[in-house]
Amino acid sequence: MAEKSIIAARVPEELKIQLEELCTLEGKTVSDVVRDLISEYIKSKEEEWQRVKLCVRIPKNILSQVDIFIDRGFALDREHVINEALNIWLRVKKAEYRKNWREELLNALNEASELHL
Picture 1 (cartoon, rainbow, N blue to C red):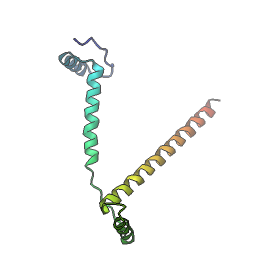
Picture 2: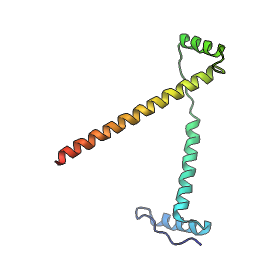
Picture 3: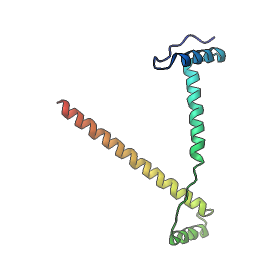
Picture 4: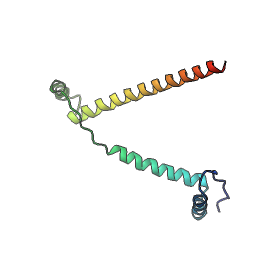
């Protein structure tokens, strides 16, 4: 039997009661149930994110270079090369975003600490 759990005060009473009843029925703790719910939510969002259609305009000279790449056996087809190129580009942009975000945060913290001095 699940032990009685403390649920955050910002959660409405009705939801607390439903959550505690669910925990009792499933024999889990509140943490386990919330973790499962969050996991299911993330999986559903990942499925949505994977269904995005993307239209990309690629100049003919780039496509001719891609075709040479394929003819030499470095890739299977145009789609494969374009997917890999977009994947690399997105990873670079994500790294740049993280770097910029980190620098902005450090600058803001430095400015805040200078104000308190």
